Image 1 (cartoon, protein in one colour):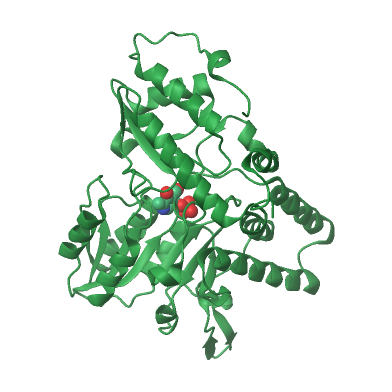
Image 2 (tube, helix red, strand yellow):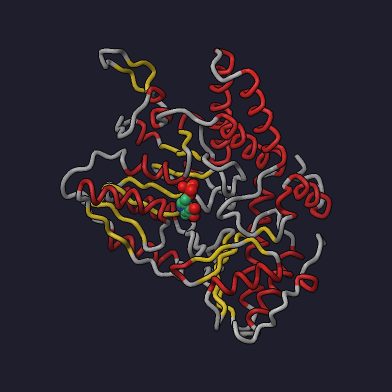
Amino acid sequence: MVGPFLPDDEKLPAIREALPSTAAGIYLNTGTCGPLPRETARAMAELEGIELRTGRADIAYWKDSEERMNEARAAVAAVLGTEPRRIALTHATTEGMNVATWAIDWRAGDKVVTTSLEHGGALAPLWALRSRLGVDVAIADIGVGGDPAEVLAALDRAITPETRLVCVSHVSWATGARLPIAEIVALAHSRGALVAVDGAQAVGAIPVSVEELDADFYAVPGQKWLLGPDGTGALYCAPAVLDRPRLTFAGYASFESLGLDLEGKLRLDARRFEVAGYHQPSVLGFARSTAWLSMYVGLNWIHERTARLAGEAAAMLAAVPGVEVITPRDHMAGLVTFRIAGWTPGPALRELSQRTLVIARTIPPLDAIRISVGFFNTDHELRRFRDGVALVAAHTPETIPHRPRIEVLRGGLE
Ligand SMILES: Cc1ncc(COP(=O)(O)O)c(C=O)c1O
């Protein structure tokens, strides 16, 4: 591990060298897609070459594929603090949230509760649930302040004895607020409801122990903070969920055996929720990126560094006149969401991209800009970004000088 043994000024260049796209700009958009490790891309290309040359149909390939899937489940399980048999591989967070939503035997009068800060990946399955089965979806207004007591109070009002499922993000994609998941789970369980957590902005950014949180489902993407390829993800399924064989989609992978007479033996582990085939280079890439983080970089170091850098980024931005940081600084992860007075987020981010080469995104429902601060970012990058924000904030779209001053704000690794 490069982790504990090297000082940051030696470790960081090695890490950034292993993540080539960190040199493409100030990479502050891991919340959309993280930078791919060189090692991951190399392993995927190698497997693609093998597939091209020897095909994908022989028994050895099939056996290797099974091992790769096991490796990916084990790598994710290690990051989530659980066992591989509780992990189903998926193709996205959204797929995991769909599986969780449809793993319940919905009945007339049932209710599902979610919050006002969810991503479409959690909301879309609820839309389908409501339109297909008429299930009542209650949206608890948790505001943007992220105060845990207020979040809990809002959910306390929303969760009733009719609630069968609570769908909630660990970290809001919009405000970057970290929600009190363990307390939400305890509240929901005390009223007989299951909890499906959207972990898209949490896993790989903050420590997550699904068993300590006691979540029933916990959905994870590969492509964000775990730095894996697109089209990968995983779903943690608690023992309580695995004890009830409720499937909506099922495939041959769901069964130990399935006869022509439809007599079947369902798998006892989370693989029952895996329906069809997987793109093997992506599964390999997902496993490699995840293992690279935990075995090469070190999860504790990642979490501590992300917390420090993201906290400092929020503080630096908050100190810029005209900037309003929306992210609650005492309950945050790696995301920082902010507004610049006098600017709408699209033009402001365009200016920032031109002047600092930042890679970030806007959050349209909040009229804000979001940056995702990763362990691979440098203090110098964050200061350059802050300087760019200060420049934009000191002007209006009408008064800002037209010529981009990249040469002033651009700089190397410090
Ligand atoms: C909180 C949250 N949930 C879900 C998603 C969707 O993730 P995926 O593309 O893995 O389904 C995102 C980001 O795109 C997100 O930020």
